[in-house]
Length: 338
Ligand SMILES: Cc1ncc(COP(=O)(O)O)c(C=O)c1O
Image (cartoon, rainbow, N blue to C red):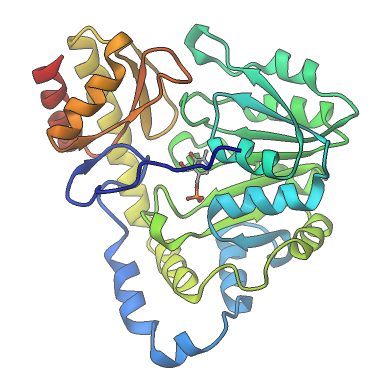
């Protein structure tokens, strides 16, 4: 296996439009809560999750037994695969999609089947995916909306996948849910093969904290617990996340700003004559042709970070949507080198 080594070095102080993070940072109330509650005594105690789980359950509209807290979505993917996948089992994922699906599936020795996104508008390949699923399929891993395409699918289409994959654990990774508003979480009670993940890394601005949630029916959650370390989520992460969910206004305001900024980005790219793919998330793929890597490097030299994706979608570069002023800054730097 190739190690997964994201280019995370030397990012501080630059305009970070490369990892789909919140570009203005976590709510000030999160920092306040950490200062207040992160005492020497707290640090000396192994994490306790009971009270926090009650509050998260209320916030997400589920029961405390319907989810596990995870060390980011990455651990949610790992725990799901470790719980349900044995050597040689078939795991289906889309291509391109979030790299860690393949990483953990490979690590588990799974037989991986990848279904390509449609070339046209990078649309969700529903029929192709449903056709590929068979009784031998043990897991289906979907990101909705998808990274890096930005495209998503509907809840009705997810139901078709759940119908087809009765023998499989179906993960719907909703890392960018807040930007799309489409969720499968409400289907948990009726769908025993459904797993939904959420993260505090993106809109909540807490990527460094490493906190996610993996939801499913409580019977499945009991199995997930068997494959998870009892203390993989640290106390600081739960303190921070409790403050974050209490400050709904901050996240709503950021989502509104990012959606407005995405329009600014679209208009700017159109003015420059640069083709792009419409996105349901806080990032956009645009076509730089043969110059994808030089464009990334020239932007970096100007203090603006973006991600090259040309190795998986020819000529494409991915830019995270931040605020409107950050998008204007990005566009002016792009115009200068285009
Ligand atoms: C689709 C998707 N899922 C999960 C993650 C990672 O989330 P976390 O920081 O919660 O591990 C990312 C990060 O880029 C992502 O794009």
